[in-house]
Length: 325
Image (tube, rainbow, N blue to C red; front, side, top):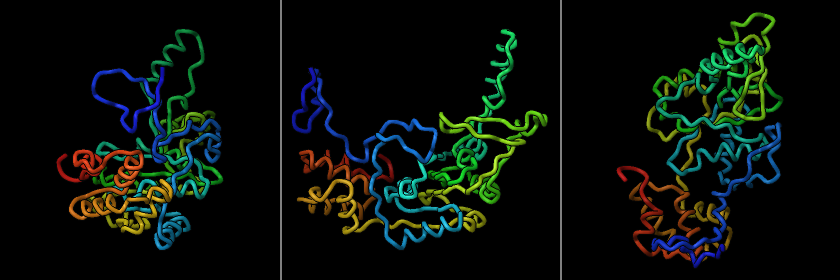
């Protein structure tokens, strides 16, 4: 039997089993079903609603400049400033479908972001087909475009690509991106070597229900994608790369903006008796690195009846982001 939860405590830590009905999640932790339609700009009816995103007119104009110039938007700022969320906000407001996401790490390469070729899988499937007396599977079945490659698939409207935390990648990665960003195209050598009668190949993309047509081994965008690149400032980028980007630095929200953010996500009622919690957040943020979503978490829990006066609980929610944990 499923019971309602007792106050805000779902877990008691006493080993006693209590099947409970989970309470509603925070708005920013609510997920809808995946898209089922083949049109990337046609989300499923039951998809999670877009979260509100607040940005000043001055910063919005920088975004507009990148859109008009068809240049990548390089977004910097403190953790939690809303860098990654900006890509989703752009996709939502411009009705450009779901965001293609490339999370960068120290092992990331441009080729992996463009496409992956499963040579071993092709050899295995080809051998099995021959043993069964069947036709060999098409080469395109073993080529899958990555997020960057999928963003360059030609179409009447641009895709939105989030290149997340580029500063965590290899030092040469920004320079490796320059040619793709300038030319808006790339080559897949495995397909370029095919004979003329096989010059048109259907390949897989990041989306399970979508295929892309590659002609003579090359894929060129029709509309340059909306590229949002985020950086936490861990490393400087080469001048040649910076010259090809439009730069946007998101400021740390002040008290007034924090109140607007809380209201946008949790409603006007969430501001009731929030002064002391906001004061604590601002005081701690001045001494160590904190993110805006940590404040939202604290306000949400307080609205659920959580006693945030307990130092241990407050420290768990408003823990510092830098240094040793």
